[in-house]
Length: 405
Ligand code: TRP
Ligand code: SF4
Image (cartoon, rainbow, N blue to C red; front, side, top):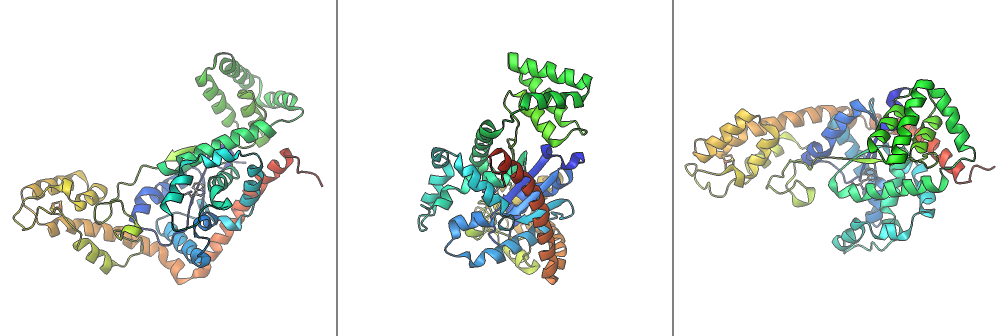
């Protein structure tokens, strides 16, 4: 196994299929994914089961939304040659892990997740007093743990779900991460490390266990993770032994906080389809120009000769995303002195957005022209994901006593 695909740096993230994506998704999430895909082994998926937890009465749209969303990922530069792209419901292993985790997850943990009550309040018109909705965050835990993902790029609103995932992993490892001959296997793994590395490992493990030296723990973890010559099983034993528990079957993931998107909508509020202030990634150029030309500006600038204040103008928010310092200075100066008109101010922005969208459209085109191509990429991604998921699930079944035939 090469270092790229070793489990310690797997990245996983999911998105509920809501249809076509907009520039807010691009600047908030997708740009980040396109960077991560070159740095780590990445898994990105459409969380269609999660969509059903709230939209179970209208499942007809799920397929279309899923494919529209994935084309937008591709349009944004997510590369199926670098990242595994798949659909949750086509990797049924997630569901089995969800079921198995549900056996040992206290009900209170789920009831206490803040999004549970909040969402029920917000979506009052739907009946969300369902078993599936309560289990939403646990299904998310299964999504993450089945790939042994260590990094999960998400927004602030998902942090509570990550915290639950960590607790579930800890409880799982505590309950099932014991092998009858654990100590002997650890000793074997240490021999395979080689004398020098083993001594370093022992030294740091003691420092952590005897004095709670967190730095020593980090050093020893890095040492173990840096070993390319040992098996995954040995790696997990050595990691588990550091903290005194048994083997770590399911590693605890960390959230990789995505900066909240600085991309404002056309009216200055957060860009969102439901506010009607969004520019879609595959919006046609005329509509984009029209939307941007008619964008509201500082209400104090009634006439061209009235000075304005960029801080009170949604257009300024866009300059912060698309313009370099020189152009931002030009806007500040020109607006406050009424030296430029609002259309002058918007012109370079419209060009920048159009150039960005042109690139998206170009990348999307092969998939729009040939839906079969898209289906193939997704099918291949599902297969790749399943292989990894099956491996974890086999281990989970074993340690939970279900390995018998
Ligand atoms: N709950 C996430 C959201 O609404 C989507 C999601 C489902 C997810 N499973 C996941 C995100 C696993 C990260 C990891 O945005
Ligand atoms: Fe807004 Fe630019 Fe007009 Fe100033 S000049 S009000 S920043 S659009």
